[in-house]
Length: 78
Length: 223
Image (cartoon, rainbow over all chains, first blue to last red; front, top):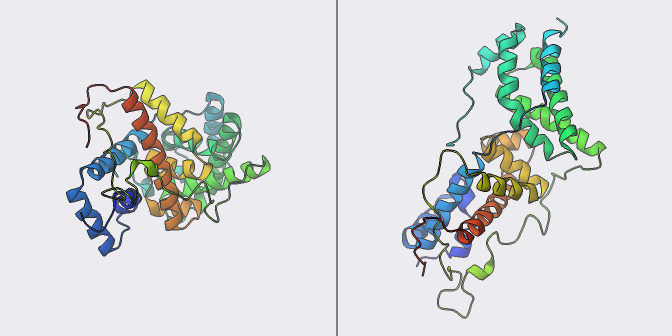
């Protein structure tokens, strides 16, 4: 095991994904990943969570609001 | 970012068309962005109706302000900034102002994974997993199962406002960290803390769901 513990690793995942870790922290993160199956899985599940959140369907604007805005655009003063 | 961005013409084309009163261009944007704007507005105000009004007022601001758009940010970031400012004013009127200046002790600090998942000081590997996270079913379908969708929507609804707003912008709308900081006027460090906590919370909910209803995962027990 290296000098990063799993309970520290899990707090760094977002920073790692954003490339926000400094070089030393990133090296320790990657080294830990290489030897720890639990954290490898945590990182994967974190990614899967992000992709899942990204697939939520959007709400839609009520029709009358949408039509009102189209009219407002049409009628806007020059 | 793996999210599909809007399939829209480049900003300079869109802006020129809006200034030319091109209704097709406006319709395109209105339909592409209003859903996300609505969801985001909902985090600042009390009801869906007032969220719809916020989105309406933001678009009116866009119509009014498009001549003055200088292109210093992307068009979408500019539109979202108008939305957030409109939503903040509306939220304040409803007594729901979200404090952005600092992190909130209790909501925004402390471990994001239950400390009981890790070994304690008296055990062989303090700080290491007691038991690995269980495997999730791997095939990710194109469309989310209705159950998973409802679960994630409910998890987002339970988040503290600021965490929900940040995860909505980053992971639902697909903005970069820099864009989110610019839209919300928060520091990169705070943005990351809020985002990480929100993601960890949603992951934990998914974990609870997948472990209660195992469906064709590899079923391997971690040790």
